[in-house]
Length: 481
Image 1 (cartoon, helix red, strand yellow):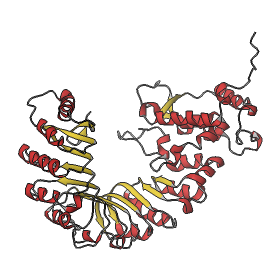
Image 2 (tube, one colour):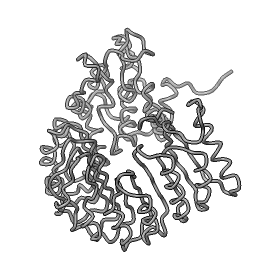
Image 3 (tube, helix red, strand yellow):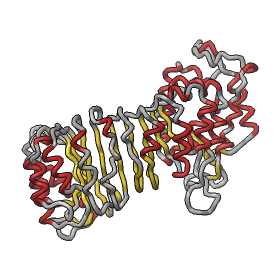
Image 4 (cartoon, one colour):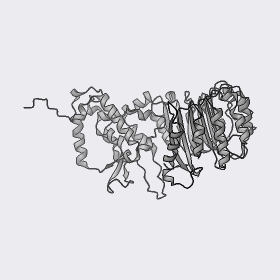
């Protein structure tokens, strides 16, 4: 006879809160894959009644949770206020029932019961800089444009922020935010207590016309130190500097820049990525007042016709340890050759018309590269096998201290032997081009990766501790495997 005690509540509600927290964290990790992000949902009023009873059946004796012990009659917010159907859309994925709608996994969990809602509010993903609240809403294609329709993040945020416990958790813990629209920013600033005091890192994932209003709104946040964005058509550097005077990190990808960062005096990290064709070298855009603090600098101008940019200002930054710059040019090579700094990280982009192979080799002998630990090399495709052989021969024989190499280049079996010269190498990431591929003749592209890995294994066969390497194949700058 079984004398074990009978429990009226389901097993999952008797699991300790800290264990449930780990379980639900795994659900979110899994749901980041598109095919697991959303679940089928068919509204059924009887099911809703059952779920309401399900919460009432919970037994507070079996776990300690202050939120669970609240009196439902005095809970101003009900999980049914956050009805998943409000953010459910007709299915867009062929693995769902065509008559169903799809709903975010995390909204479903928050809707189950008060205890689940309290636990999910504490999951770490909410507090990540790049978490987007709109990812909770499945894509809708009602406009017929072929692209996903914009999500009404204002309505979504107002609904989520109707839960005071969730808002309080955000107010206490969330310092890093992705902002997608001005409406969403207005809701956050209105509904989340202490946002202006707690905001530290902001990622602006919005349309260009929203940037300046967002700068003005966020200017009241005195502690923002990190600012980054997705691609923008244009960037007013002066407006950024005026609104965020205490920035320590700025990452901006833009079609073109105007203005200056001269006012910024605390920057430690600066990444500027531009597609402008004409770089106005006479404009002091770099933050010269941060010359003593800046340690990581990245300047990439992908479409520029005159790559001699900002080199007059570069010697002012005497504490650089990380430099990414491209395309490599005569003036950049001259700066590196004379620089009184010690780099741990060096990333360059090569374009054959801008710098000769002799100038490239001379640059690699610079004193600032003597103790280099990580080297990254990318390039345009307008170079032949002879040029690339000289490039590989040069950096593998000169940069002997390097432990980590990242490449985006074509492939030749002989170059694996060159890489084996780097006796301190521990990590190799190679983004190999499918066109051109040298030294393999006519080969099925499906087995190229396997052949490259075999060549690397052979080249490093004599190493006691072989470097870890990863090979990826790309075709016209797009990864295919």
